[in-house]
Length: 89
Image (cartoon, rainbow, N blue to C red; front, top):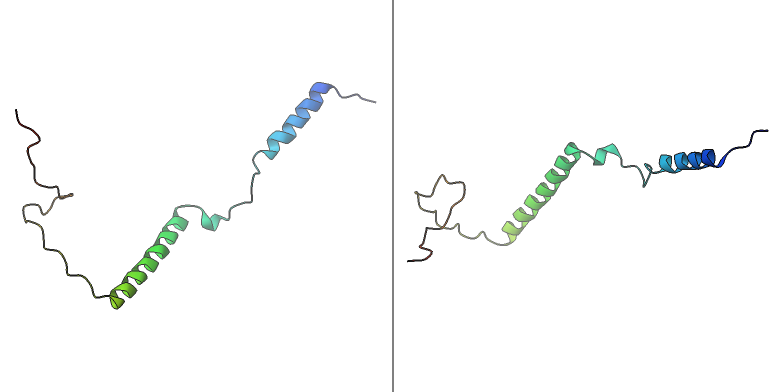
């Protein structure tokens, strides 16, 4: 009869422990992971938000649009306030 040594038992237990490390939690279905799923989720949220805005605009009349900014500022990525002196010497 063959007697197993302590190092082989320890190595066997270590293998069992390491094999179990990758299986934490329930598996995630592939339909809920990835770029396509994220895009679809965002589209549905945007459509719901658009529907809420339309419902709110039917209930309340729309506010008048603000005046258009100066034509000199048109075409800018970000409309910045006019420059003012920071300090004087």
